Each structure stands twice: as structure tokens, then as C-alpha cells.
Image: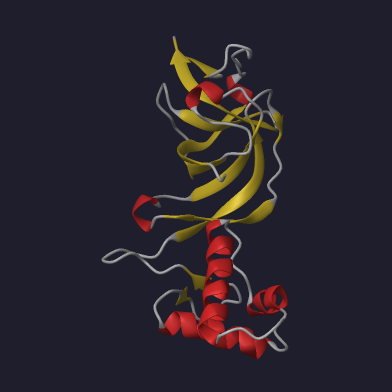
Amino acid sequence: MGRTPAGETRDRVFRFVRERLLGGLPPTVREVQRAFEFRSPQTAREHLEGLVREGRLGKEAGKARGYRLPARAGGRPPVLVPLLGRVPAGPADTAVEDLEGYVPVEAGRASGELFGLRVRGESMTGAGILPGDIVIVRRQARAESGDVVVALVGDEATVKRFELRRGRIELHPANPAFQPILPDPAAFALLGKVVEVRRYL
């Protein structure tokens, strides 16, 4: 790459790292080196360490992907939550955990064990959950009527609104084009409650 003022290059490095962090994929030093065509990883490391000294980035020691966005004033740094593949918002589909990356969640909202899933399908559009959105899910085995949940029916996962009617579990879509699911209790497991929806434009 052509020579540019050090401060301008550092700003570009910061914007690149920030975009990757917000997308849930913290970059390594070598990934920064390749992105900017630096001759050596040391140059990338110097820019990253400079951003740490300036307080624009934080760093967890001993981690290859340890760079992070610093906490807001008086707060704690965001927690990186694993993004575990996709979940249908439509007919249930085979559940497969496939780590895609990580999603930053504010530390104050990160109570319990959290994971993220990318939504596929349109059965929850009436609840504001669209195809391609990421749902942040708190892993838990119980829910209240009206909660939006990720559930396992047999070996198939789905995101729906949980309803308990006359002691029977029902999983309701938020789109009239789809039918409720009435699972056999013996084949039903609640994976967790949706606590946040993310959409990236």
C-alpha cells in the first residue's frame, strides 16, 4: 500500500478492527497485516498497540483475538457471545451448532449463558424478527407464556412464541401464513429465551 500519514493509517486500522468487532469476528494481528498489506505483522501490531495506548481499543492478554472495544465511561467492556449458526423462523429444521463468530453484548445485559443465532425464514416477522437478524438467546430450560424462545422439537430447532394452554405447550408464529407447532412433550426441549434482536444494515 502507498505511504500515508501514520495517524491516518491508524484511524483506518481502528475502523477496520471496530467493524470486525461489531460483526463478532475479532481480527488477529496477521489479519490486520493482510488487510492493509503491511510488510510485516510487527507494523500491524504497532498500530494495534498504539490504539490500546490511546484507549481506543482494549486487549485481553494471551489471546490471539484479544482486541476489543473498551468499556464506556463507568462501564464494563462488552461480552463476546458465540454465534452458533442459524435457526429457522418458519418450519422447524435440523439443529446443528456451527460457530460462525462472536457478537458483542453489553456486559450489563449479559446475565446467564448467552448465545446468538442467525434467523432464517419469515414466521416471526410480526414480532419484528426478520430473515438475517441475529437473536441473542439466554440458555434456560423454562419460559413463561408469551416469551419468544428457541426450542428443539425432536432434533429440529425453531424460534417461536411460547404458549402454555391447558397444560399443553404450543409454539406460535408471528405471521398468519404459518401454523402453530404443537410438540409432543417427550420430544420437546427449550433451548432458551430470546432477549435481544440484532439487525445489521
